[in-house]
Length: 618
Image (cartoon, rainbow, N blue to C red; front, side, top):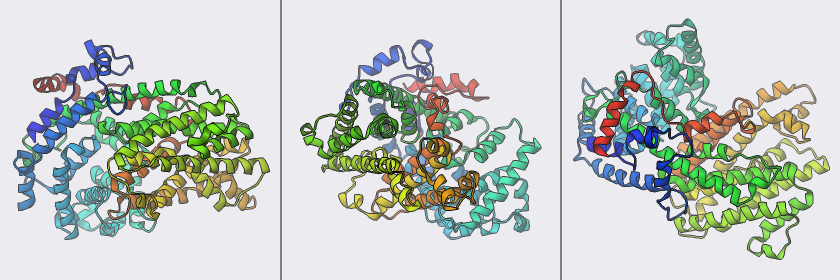
């Protein structure tokens, strides 16, 4: 594994220094990358001409080497297996092993160590079921084990945290943890992975641990320490409100090769912290090269499709690509990111067309054209606007449908068309309500509004591009529909809470105004918005439970896309309507796609060492 780590750290067409600084010391953050871009664009991508996949192919080759290195004959795996067989040694605790897993996942490279991570989690789960003292008597280990096991699909009950449910009820042997910031932080993180409103234990832990952590921040004792930043971030941004790639960047930049203990355990002595950091930097930087190429391709597509000529349409390509690269971040999932971003742009154009850009005749014409699909030539375009919108949808769906059908070994284009039809018809229903001044019931509203939130064309086709085969029976399974309903409802309600005023001024109803209306005026807008938090929380928890459940008709990797989009909705709508602001998330776009990593503290002094390590194997 040490060899695999070094090979992977050396992977890619550029040495590490070039990845960080660009050709001839140029920053990679700007889209015109000079010699780097020239070299990359000379490579063709068979499945999508014009989009670079050279870096991804190189990573794939390296991963193949790494998979072979994952065999029991290699040092790393042999070390893990030895620990697994003989139990925890005096210098290898379960806490250290879980910290190792946590750091690898938090920096976005856990996929390179999947076999070893699985062995650690299997052993931890066995100890959890046996209520091993190493877990039960150590609060930090217990909380970390619960969170990591649950988020990796293991069936762990929150009831096992009963001994730390109330701060006032701490056993004397645990009282010291009330002043242990790291233990409190782990408890607070564990409280956020709730999958049911019945898990009152987690609500209790989250409440008092949050209060104690805030007190510690106010006291000033943590000021200026890495732990201060970590606590502040955890309190301000629960894990379901951030994008994975932004978290990876923050964790990489704050990782201290001289301080972190993640690799101090004896079974990991075959490689060092700076080996891992070199790997992480290489991985993140090569991914950014791919992201920049994909974004350039998408920008060209917008222009070629004439979508930029539609004056009524918001231009949201950067945000949709951020949501794709920020969650579906591995190089080999390029097609899924491209589809996600393209259909995000198209749904925004269509939403604006139905809201402000099109007449009723144009809207009806667009719906008819999509209903006719391959026979659309029998219907005339009502206007140039309709022609541009329909042509973009038609071309994109057919192109992506052909690719998806090859991957799935069956024709799925018809399903993609049906997804678009569902959206357009639900949007037409909204228009008819507005024209007729009809006030729907809450149930009528949310059933239709979950569709008009327009996540269907973004998420559902992407399921076909993340690896697993999805039979038609899975698409028709109740689990599939429930995953979509929960994701869409959660997103719609988050949006409604933040966009009430604008939609009210446009004469549109949403869940907030309906709640006030149903109360007969006894409920204020502020109260109605607070009241919406409960169904939002319920949808999020129920969705996470479905995603983490091992059994089911929908493959786990596909289910995860529903959760990723739920996080995207929180990212844009948990603190206002950031999606509508061109500037609100511009820095985040740059952080994921353009800006080189900025290592902090002692790590900056390690850069020459890291460059040398990479260049030795380049």
